[in-house]
Length: 256
Image 1 (cartoon, rainbow, N blue to C red):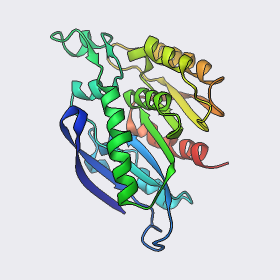
Image 2 (image 1 turned 120 degrees about the vertical axis):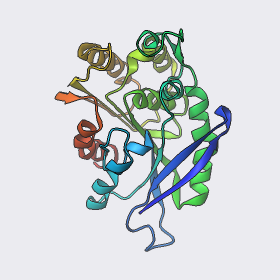
Image 3 (image 1 turned 135 degrees about the vertical axis):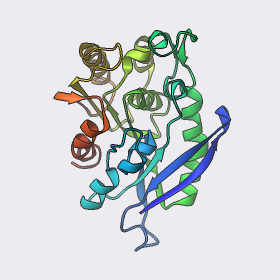
Image 4 (image 1 turned 90 degrees about the vertical axis):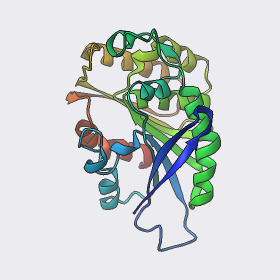
């Protein structure tokens, strides 16, 4: 079952669509509560018809057929460079030469975006739905993986299980590494990472993606309770590739 509604991102003064997946059992037992997974690029999570490139993760289809029962909160991304602004915790000049000659930096709104999730969206979801407020996870791909890792570092007592998929850490490599080093991540129970060997996008090549994530993994090994890093042979940087990894990701986060 799906529910959609619009919210105001107060710190950024922008409206945004929120897409909720509810498990099949949600309406059967009105006393039952569920863990919540927050995900970025919400328009790409459930249905191909809604997805930006006509291909989605089909997460609802997977959960309907699995024995996992959780609420998924998908937050639509902003358009164009504003997506990079919101998913980039710090300003970066890595992509300005690729996307816009008129801007010297991109990013830097990630802090406000995460604070909106923690202080506005999460309380709203916990009030509207039967959740376990203490069982909250976050997942995202590409820039969504970067902002998920940032959120785990600044709010490790909230986002205790995290999936960072095909992450664009290179966008803020030095800053995210420094933040991980100084953060107490001992409360994070599971941290999933992966990267494909065919991830090249724009001017960023495959090896940059692999090395960028490998460096983050080495830092996280000593910081979190359980960390997994997969290098996926032949996997490209798109929703179809991420869809194929959904069972592995969800099994790691929520089973065992």
